[in-house]
Length: 447
Image (cartoon, rainbow, N blue to C red; front, side, top):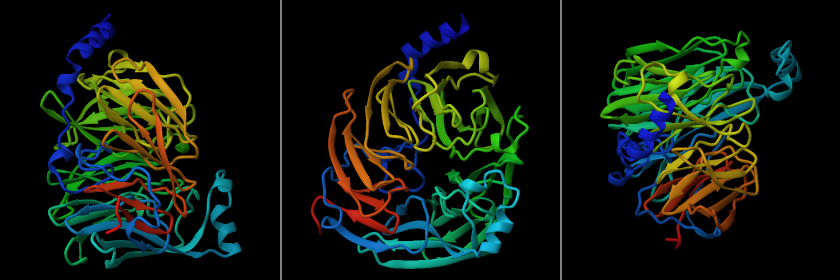
């Protein structure tokens, strides 16, 4: 009965609680993973290229050394991204590192790795800074689908935050490239780092959902000093592999109260980003290794439950305490939900692309599936919404553009020279795309 009342209330008043903390409508930068508000939606007047020849329409393209799946971010004329340069491990090193590891068949080993922060001029593609932040001897093995530089940086007030999981977090001066502070929050990621830092007001929020420990921390942007630390809810699974997660927080505004919403293994929870106080939690089941950022639409937080059988779940974030019984509004069938790509929410709809290329559009308030379409390729990067179009980037190097209309009409398929693992962003009316080897700025007309 309570759930029905909540549901009807959402249908009538959901649109009134759609406000996010910030809006990219008033910004000329893309300052953290999926933009300043975490939605993956460009400004409404942005009109990036739809059908293009990547090499011939590149304003510039810059080779990026090493391997990294972090997305680019920028303010002013500076683009920042991370990369990792590894040295090959010997057969003896590989055998020693993987001995007794039951996930050995899905892991790769490096002898050492350098962690780099790279700054590129947004106008001409020249490298302004290449900062070696750390060299790690005998790093932990990772999944070959991951990298040692997967979390996306975050920028605010002339400071750039670089997070490399348990290997460390650095704050760098945007102008000089000098390190201001660094911290280390150690957990066992098992297959490498994933969660990106976000900046809320004067705080950097970092999610540490390891196989051993699960907690969230906030540190001062200017100094790196501790502000708060909050443990995640207790998890039923005793096996650490079913306790890990890699999600990036989304900040939402619910009736004038800010919340940091973070899905994790078994639980999704909302926190006060100023104090770290847990506001609510909901038990979504046995899902783990959750990576996609949620979407906030029609007054509901919609998220993926991760492995093994991923579903989409919608939660009403207005409750307090354990809201499992009253706050879970709907759940999709356990198939075709994404394990890695994040969700897009707009105009009362949720758009989700699965790792295997099933694109679905659902009604946010009810979970009703409005359409689905198969898109060629396999997907790790998160979709970008610009204008009325979705940009979907595959590991095969294809960027497919489809309309946001219910029929999901395909407009174009654009080919790149190598894999697309990082999520593309918009600079004015141009696309900024990181491929496996390059960073490219693509325009409708080559300048």
